[in-house]
Length: 218
Image (cartoon, rainbow, N blue to C red; front, side):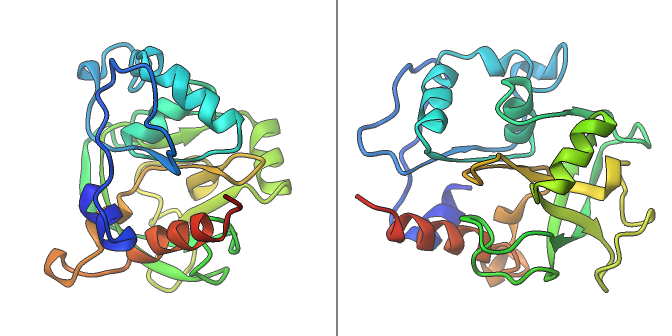
């Protein structure tokens, strides 16, 4: 993730430990990266959502700050109630580690500005608990308000059951907050930001963020 951010922004990000209580002065973006936290006990992200730094992250988001959560970061955002829904065990009950395809469901956000709606790009699945779930009313609200950011699809852009390997409701791979400044998604766009990594499909997400932050009022 640090490589992706530095490649897009031209300088390395500040790295914070979860026990810290404040964000650096002048923070533009908070990223909750993937991986594992607290051994994924209880539910993935449930304990991490109460880490000391998360109070500052919540306050930053409430002031309109941009927040990106990927994989475990998405789980933490849901457990912290910064995004709706929950991430459950994959439908196969197996850890999934493979490429997948995502379709851009909403363009023109701080995270998707360099894509057009309907664009398809390759990303990486690496999770055991990536099955997005929410009740029907929440799913309808997300759809109705245009808050579904990405959907699992095949290489042609069809959101099929076969492409939905973890069983997520309505093939949802990523969702946005109502103000479009918080994004959570399960796949890892940061894994494809350099040809040496196998491709640059994920780079537009980070370049979109740089564009949005550069255009934001000081």
